[in-house]
Amino acid sequence: MADLSLPLVMGVLNVTPDSFSDGGQWLQPDRALDHARTLVAEGAGIIDVGGESTRPGSIRVDVATELDRVLPVVERLVAEGIEVSVDTMNAETAVRVAQLGVRYINDVSGGLADPDMLAAVANTDAVYICSHWRGLLADADAAATYHDVTEEVLAELSARLDAARSAGIPDERLISDPGLGFSKRTDHNWQLLANLDRFVGLGLPVLVGASRKRFISETVPQALRTGPTADATLANQARDAATAVVAAMLFDRGIWGWRVHNAAATSAALAVAHELRRRGA
Image (cartoon, rainbow, N blue to C red; front, side, top):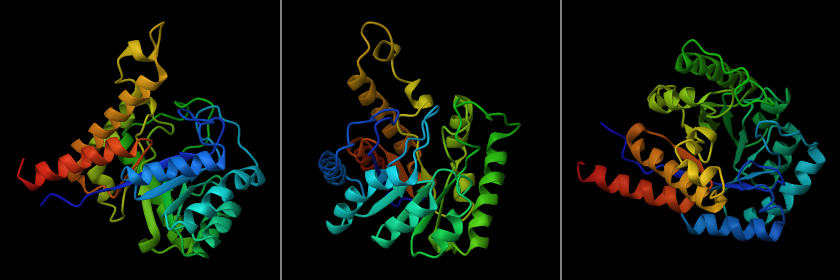
């Protein structure tokens, strides 16, 4: 029987100057907090705060800089009772935010960027979101060589989940993420989306982050993306609509959550999909 539970929406809050679609917009804490509140009002159940860009070609920041960006926002969100995730590859950051009451540590590197990450998270009460990753690379397509992308990503992600278990993180505190956009070409990402049931079959909640990524952007009319008539705002609106369509079409695959920049669009799309499925459509 299809899973008709309503997936969770995780709202993206990048407190960085260089994230790929909204860098600099929410760098100031007051603006970040206002945007987080907007995301919650639009249907986000979790706010994912990130202080370091992971876009292709981004330069890594030191832990002190990441903490300076993240902590003022996280402290106030937690104080307001908002469920928070922190997008970090640093063990020190993970421990600091967990001490503040952050519930989720979202590590796009699956514990590979910082060898202390898994043990550090194991010693907290936080839930660990473990992604498939082949390195932080200048070229988004670097290392994107697969014979069978679904089987290989499943195997590599399973190995990282096993490493998390071995470090002491129990299954009830693990969430998996296929890592769309990280060392994956357009066809790879679509293939993984078509096979999300295989990831659900690992027996853990699955988070999917397709929002505004390049393979999604490629569905946007070219006139909005390039040339003299390009409009960044309209292009992002089109990307958000495409992201919402993906979530709605995969509604009954048992996905735990969708990480998105526009919570309203995906929340509405999921609500419509839920109603249609409930009525037998």
